[in-house]
Length: 320
Ligand SMILES: [Zn+2]
Image 1 (tube, rainbow, N blue to C red):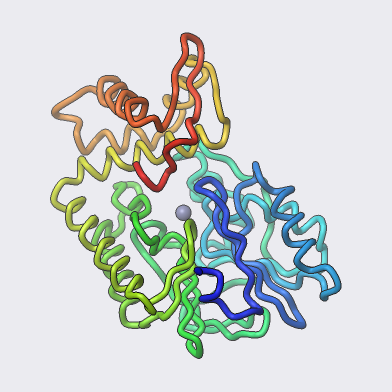
Image 2 (cartoon, rainbow, N blue to C red; image 1 turned 60 degrees about the vertical axis):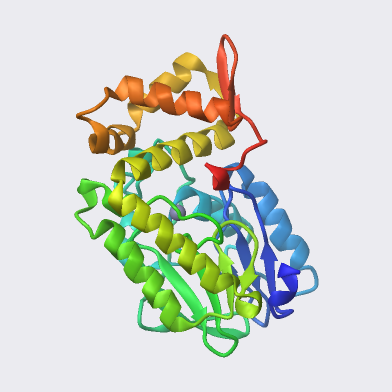
């Protein structure tokens, strides 16, 4: 049972593939890591309030990174717990204080998040106390170079955010030229770093907790490396996967929208043009996107009627 992999004072709210998981660290000063998508902000607050009945109020809200599915509940939690401090990765400090939607990537991806401000940072190389435990802060790259992982060395527990999932890798945003970063190599270096930490238990940003007790951490690292090697060899496959994941995310958020609304959303999110650059010589952007939508419909990841396109819950974002 995944839940039993965690000590009793760490309570995981395992969410779906829109909202990220949230980890509540109980103790004298309760802390929550990651707050889900803003669509589910009320539910996130309810989960926290229920778990903290008879306990001290929430003291800290910390984030692995600032994608909208990891910090969308923060504004709601801040309103309910005005005394709580809010921590973001040190490299995101300016971005979040100015709420620079370009650097927060919401503009890039056509996504959104309720604005909030931070009042403290998570500095890679240092530690932070969350609940009863002291966590090391580690930098990551590949998915988001402003993301951090949190590692509790006594129980060898890793809060990986989107740097490691069990059966899938997250989008390698660092491959987009706009970021001028290390792309796949950065992600691979992050996996090497995770391997060196030798985590016994991993809390991923999405999906169930897994542990090395049955070899699942080694297996997850191996499968992520294999997938990244394939993407490195065939970056068009990564571009296609990323486009599918972003479309699925949008449909999970809105549930359904008109074809015209969807067309405008696609046209307004520059990420699709940037991903299409990987295949630009071979196929027009329109034809590439049409083919991707056909595949998603065939796989039952979305549905289309005469007037609308919508999310099909049969196939999760994990299985694209
Ligand atoms: Zn993310």
